[in-house]
Image (cartoon, one colour):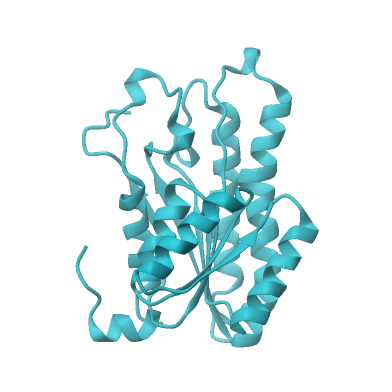
Length: 248
């Protein structure tokens, strides 16, 4: 990965990022990538042991990390996380909503409890965390919300109906949120929607063979870094990533 320019580094150094789903996959890779650029990272997920390992890794490389065990579907958990970040760092500049789950089944075979869980984590949890960070960003007069959506939020696939429904919702939420903060008289809050194709993570287990051309989490993390390192007058609204050989 190319190094940041001096001006880019000035934009990102010593900022604070909250990354949900940081215990694995895209969230973990995004945390490492941003920490290497001087961003102080708050690591949020339910698996505290995995977060501690990531914290040790980041700090061994000279970065700053804070473990905040969080269930994004629990309102009290989310509020406590924001308070802990404010107490520890005094600000929050970047939110990367990466927590997610994927259960694949045709509609007639689907477990409705799994459908509900995907909506709760992928969409409701994302909206809940975003709403919780906005007052802090508004007081600062700046902030950047990065939502990890999916190609499945643009194109539906057989067997991925529930997952697609949750990600289409993320895309709609991102666009509305961006428009709410667009204009001269509003706070300076940017919104980026990142839509990767299939990524080699814990979620990719069980994918059908025709979907197995996948991206690496680091590919998505580079997109996060690109979006948040733009100068203040640039808002990268959407990034769509597909594996080069993907035919779907």
